[in-house]
Length: 375
Image 1: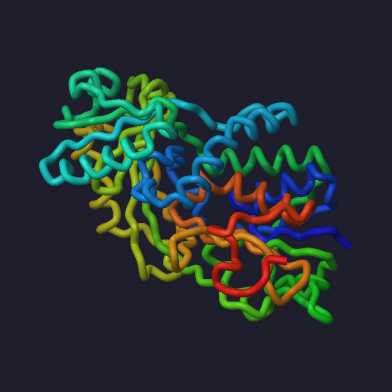
Image 2: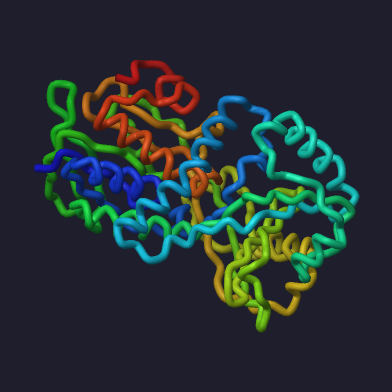
């Protein structure tokens, strides 16, 4: 018998599990390691100021809180004995290389200027200075520099959360959870594909794009669907990429540098993809074409890996957190779309705090916005 079971071991579920265990809740995290899980195929750009959602007050406040929480969480994980979280503040250069990017560039700078007090670490950068920072970059027509932007490897960070969680008693198991059993309107157990049942007082559904499969058991429709995103991992021989900032164009693509010549280029945004985790010729063409347009100096890079993530996108583009209204002890933590690596660790904390202390979930991300009571 567990106090809580978390279904899903991506960055959101791992954060829920870590924070519950740290609070003394006897917790089991169960994950079936699906092909196409979003956490392993995200580039990990941590920068709310460069999002097109910056003008949305509620989203921006939530995203800013999420980004501000990262350093505190990293300190906690390191105190728990984790050696590598992968998190690092390297900055970001947003570059308008071609004429069609100038209008989006001006729109982005207008959004930033409207929040100048909240985004003090964004400034225009001379095109030549931008290429000095990143030799592979095409000389842009316009560019700005986000000094405090960060990057994170989602797979590494989720692993760090689970590792630290184990030090607080978190149990982690592989398994295919097929259902949630209830009795008299409250959680009783979860069902596993091998026919076993695991008794628990509470269950947190953090299954990413697969979360809607539990909607019937919880008596609600979970308005989340998969959106395929393809990324490409590159190796640039003899390049000192560890000090490069993240590169972002104005066609929704980016290049994230890592040490030792490694880079990640992404990403497609394929609505209507369904649960299809294939790497496609068109996806590779789009990602590599945009990466080389933005940074032609990557032309000699070796393609070392292709990854696909099925991003859990909510109908209104905002995460779904909180209590399932009609089942006591059932909670949701899903729907983060392409911003899961930025928002996920903080979302996990919020849900864990809600489970343990009854701390309220912000209205903008609460499941109650679809009707019902958050509990």
